[in-house]
Length: 114
Image 1 (cartoon, one colour):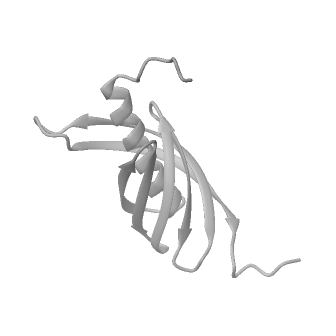
Image 2: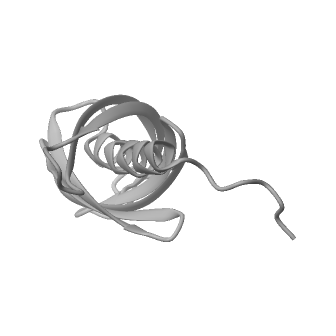
């Protein structure tokens, strides 16, 4: 049984944003891109478009730190991590934020096995 107190709303929102940003950063690699993440429980399902094309992934985070795994339109799989922060937009539940991350390709169908 988990007896830890729940995270404050600010941390939950930051975790979701960080996870979303990580998904976007992960999916776009080290290149420019934009993505959207939809929180589902402790995870975020993300879709992004970057210089490498369309990507999809799943990520999670705690506080400002997030990790994720994604696949691009060619079938290459990447894993990444990042950190981000956000602020609410007016009195809505919408947020805007920034983050940085890094990723690495863990499977590429175009890479010839040795």
